[in-house]
Amino acid sequence: MEDFTQFLVVFSMAAAVGVLSTVFVLTWVLHFKEGLGWDGGLAEFNWHPVLMVIGFVSLQGLAIIIYRLPWTWHCSKLTMKFIHAGLNLLAFILAVVSVVAVFDFHNGAKIPNMYSLHSWLGIGAVVMYCLQLVLGVGMYLIPLAPISWKVAFMPFHVYSGLFLFTSVIAVSLMGITEKLIFGLKDPKYKDSPPEAIFVNFLGVFLVVFGVLILWIATRTSWKRPSEQIPHTLHTNGEGEEDTVYPQMTTAQTRCNE
Ligand code: HEM
Ligand code: HEM
Image 1 (cartoon, rainbow, N blue to C red):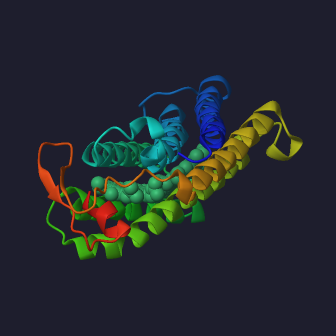
Image 2: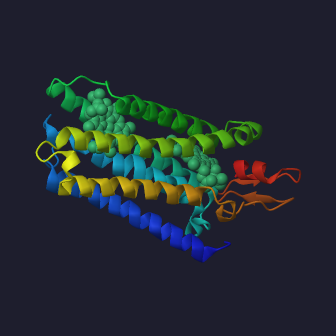
């Protein structure tokens, strides 16, 4: 890999900020708020930010850069596809549980559902993410789609994946701000109590995490090397043979792996 040290620095920073975000969101709900529970009350609501930050933001970020980790390059592409898809599926499941928690809390407290911009954009992101998962599995995991479709679809897959990841961070920042405004009564958010400062930092960490993941995912020199062996047959690591045709472009080989 080119610039391995640079990759290591950026990756370590992303990992550190990801862990910090998790520690901060847990400290927020366990120390400053009502803790965690499944009782229809505020403790149930608290699963919402926890699962969104850990699942939808951090796990999705890891899933996006999983192909870029040089330590995984000895694994077959198929194994990496399963890990990429599996992490994204786990992130999706946690997001759904998180949305169920907030709906359940709202219904119990007789608060209307889906009135805020945060909730509109949030539910939009969850639905689009589900679509991205289904299309990803259909195109790249089930061996039915023709190679020309896989190649043509890949730029859309990457663009919509990065767009979704960015949206999820933006939606989280809106949710955090809403909760601070609703939840802080005396002193209020504008009086900058310790909870407000602490949670503002959580928001900053989410932004920095996003910046670092997007940086890693957009460096072409940090891409997983293609498994192309021109003019030969080679195995895909699962004991089956994939034909690599001499006239294939790098993009075609990458999508055929
Ligand atoms: C409500 C999605 C992150 C705070 C909601 C609702 C959805 C949603 C769909 C509407 C539930 C209903 O109407 O019953 C999301 C998504 C997130 C996210 C997709 C991550 C990408 C966060 C975070 C917080 C948060 C990190 C921080 C505390 C809230 C609050 C509500 C809410 C306070 C209730 C008020 C409202 O409906 O706007 N969220 N959320 N959200 N969320 Fe989030
Ligand atoms: C690549 C996002 C689901 C297969 C990527 C990339 C992103 C992404 C951002 C570019 C990564 C890079 O350039 O290193 C997502 C998101 C998903 C999702 C957000 C879920 C909502 C899936 C699924 C599959 C899949 C279910 C099925 C196996 C692939 C493949 C690549 C890729 C084959 C190309 C890797 C390469 O260039 O070597 N995905 N993806 N994705 N994704 Fe997904």
